[in-house]
Image (cartoon, rainbow, N blue to C red):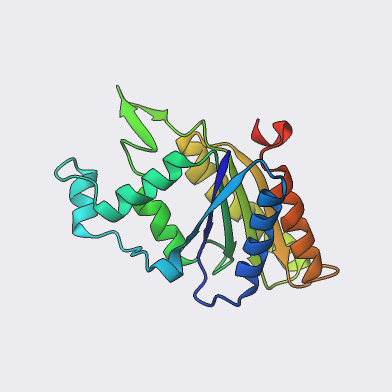
Length: 198
């Protein structure tokens, strides 16, 4: 089986990429599964929802080539893993733009007779958010609960993609950064275990 591992951070030496590297190593260490990396920053993915995207949304144009390529990557995957830094209590803009442009009507969901048909029930999702504030801040303000509601329910549940893992790694965690790398490797090793794929 194959996982699509998506990151969005402009600096390759950043902690986000190191966590993603460890997760990819965990997947490969099983000897049974593969991982395809999608580094949106390095690849220069354009997150802007352009007039062409709007025309396509209205059924007036074909899917742009860059969006089609991303959908094909997702179609090849048996699981989607997002490893991302928390910017303003959400995704970085480039990752949010990837969602906006790629998870579109006709591919991620359709509308039939006034109801939404979810089309991504076959794609388990694993979310690894990396933040700089401490746990108390996230709990006191309800930030992580808000992020989970927005991302898990508002995006992936809307498309039917089951969120299997939702982790928040913080710089104040005990054993940082090694504890993050260890957790990422462990997650990679079990992504395709029966209890993780539902």
